[in-house]
Amino acid sequence: MLLILRRGLDLSVFLELFCFGLLQYLFFSRFYGLADCHGFLTCAIILGSYGGKMASFLIHMLLTILLLGGVQAGRKNINRLGNLKKPVAMLPYLMPAFFLTWAFLLIKNGAP
Image 1 (cartoon, rainbow, N blue to C red):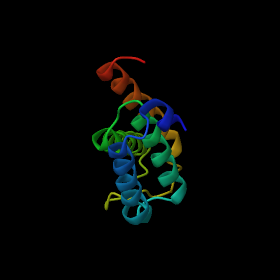
Image 2: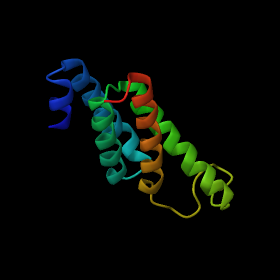
Image 3: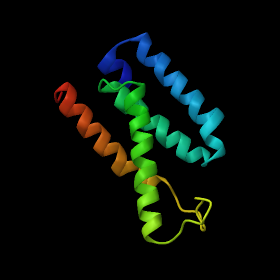
């Protein structure tokens, strides 16, 4: 509803969200859990509601991975192959990255 209320029936946004969802569930779900895919798609819907495009969705993913990697490297939880030694939840890293991406999007597009 938020997407429709803010952007109307803008088919380009729906198409980008659909493509991002396919990317999440068909490709990235192999690397992390479905809950994380749901989280990324939910954040993408909000970002899309505020003028975000595919680039914003992918930047959000990149920031999340960088936060996760930075913290886990500091905790020495990364093995020599680049995988986590002990799995951790991604959602605590997803949310700060989302708020950062959203803030930049609001600054770029002008606050609502």
